[in-house]
Amino acid sequence: MGLKGMFKRKAEEPDKSEYVGVRRNWNGSFTPQRITPKVYGIVSKGGLRSRISRVKAAFKLSSEPFDGAGRIEWTLGGGSVGYVEGVVISPGAPPVISDVLHDFMAIGSMEHGYEVMRLKDSVLAAYLSTEKAYRLCGEADGSSYFEVDVKNFE
Image 1 (cartoon, one colour):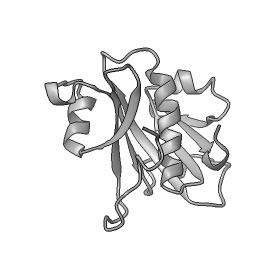
Image 2 (cartoon, rainbow, N blue to C red):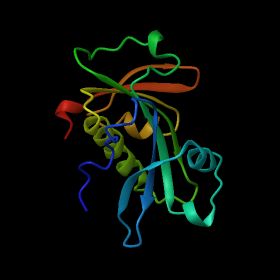
Image 3 (tube, one colour):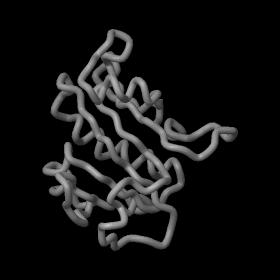
Image 4 (spheres, rainbow, N blue to C red):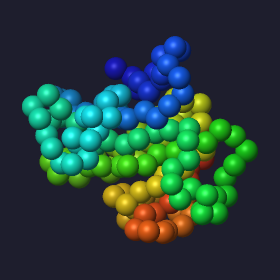
């Protein structure tokens, strides 16, 4: 199954925050899926119930700026901006989860039509600082702030 359309909203839904879970499939691959704020809360607290135990990571995607976005000197602009925050990784996630999140955050932003993705993160910062597509824009209050030109993401 392809990724196209996995993140798209239904036409009748208002533009609001979306929680995305990264589910590990039985064959070892990963699939993004919309999750409820309740499931996100369970994953973010490290709780794993049998029905969500395959959700290995999650994040929040929104068109609304996250707290602290106004303090950062962003360099990309001139288009619609998506904001990602609240990245969480389950303790049982395999090491490859950083690569998977790297892609799914940008793909989710592309699927929503954002041209730029801005990320507030404290979980993947060391990993993302080595990635060419993710530009570090600042650090404050224990978080790192990155931006990505998703329209040219590879």
